[in-house]
Length: 169
Length: 305
Image (tube, rainbow over all chains, first blue to last red; front, top):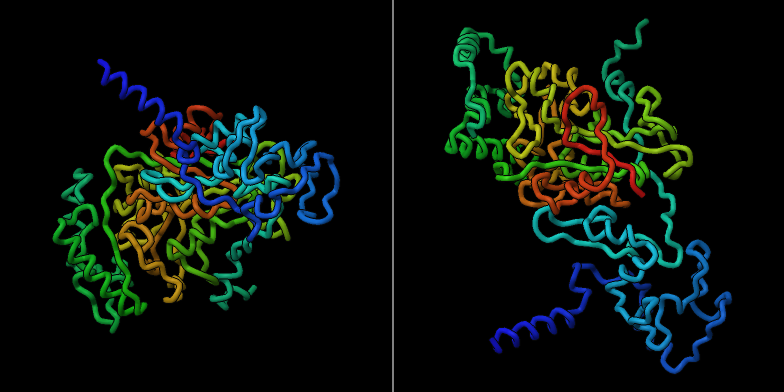
C-alpha cells in the first residue's frame, strides 16, 4: 500500500515537473541570427517600461498589427531569455504556443489537434509540429502576400503548336 | 494482388482470342515495343496488375526497372507496397487559408514525375473564384497576378477526390482503374488503353491524359516510385493523383501537404478518431464539391480561420 502511494506521488511529481515543451515536438524557435540568449546583452540593463519607438536596437520591431502591446507583455522583464504568461509564469520560447493561446484559445485548441497550422513528416507516426512563430512573425503576425508559381500552360499552347495543320481555316 | 476476383472469364477469353487473332493494334503498343523497336513479348502478354501473382509482380518490376535504366539512365526504384489495413485515406482543405500560390501544384509535379512543359500535366488545378458563392462557370485557373492572395477572390484547389462511388472506375471498359482498400483510386498504366472514358466521367477534371510522350528530364526524376503511382508514364495513358501512394503507404504525408506554406492541406486516416481529417470532420462544417452528383468523395473542404 505504502509502496503504491509512493509510486503515485513519484508519478505525480514527474508529471508536474516534466517540461511542457516535450508535449509537442517542435523545432528550435526561429530567432534572428545571434540574438539569443537575450540576457547576453540585457543582463544588468535597466528595464524601461515606457512605450516608445526603439532607436538603439530592435528598430525593425514595430508592433503595428498586434494590438496595443509592449515588450514586457510577452517577454519576461526579470529574465529576458524567457517569456511570461499573464499570470506571471515564466515559460521557455519552445512553448510559446501557450503564450499565444492566452488570447487565441480556439486556435491553440485547433493547433493541438492538427487542424490549425502545418504538419510535416508522417500522418501515421511522428509528426513535426511548428510553433506559431515559425509562420507568424510574433511582432507582426498576419501573412504577407507572396508571388504565386506560374500559371499552367494553356492547352492551345501545347497541342496546337505541335500540330501545324491547326492553322488552316 | 487479387482484390477483385469477379473478373468475367468469358470476356477475358474473348480479349485473348482477339489478341491472338492479330488485333494487336488494340494494345497500347508504346509499352510493348522495346528500346530497339522490337516487340517486348513480356510486356505484350502482361496481365492486369491485380491478377498478377507475387512472382509475376517481381518479374514485372525487374523488367520495368531495367527498362527505365535504359531509357533514363537512372536507377529508378519501383515499389509495390500494398495498401495498409484499417486505413481509409481522406483529405481536408481549408479554403479560408489557401492563398492560391500553387506551391502544391509544382511540388506534386516534381514528386510524381509529371510531364513538364510544353506537354505539361498537373494533378492539382487551383481555381480562383470571386468572393461569393462557388460558381464553377466563373472560376478560372490561369490567373497570374504579381502577388497572392488577391483581395476579392478565394482559391479552391481541385484534384482527384478519390470518390467512394467513383464514376471513373465505373466506366473503365477494361478495369484498368480501381479503388484500393485504403480508398485511393489508382490506374494500371500498363493496362490502360487510353480511351479516356474515365476523364469524361469525372466531374472534377481529376484525370489527365498523356497526349504526347511525357517530357521528363532524367536529372529531375524522383527515383522513389510506386507501380500504381509516380513511376514514369508513357504516351496514351491516363494518370491522376494517388495521394502520393509511394509516400502515404509508408506513413508519410503526401507532398502537397508538406508543400503548403499556410497549412491549409490536411491528410490522414478517416478511421482514426485522432487524425487531423477526422477531427476536422467532427468539429468543423465541411462540404464536398458537387455533392449532388453522389460521388461520395473523400476530399473535404471547409472554411475556418
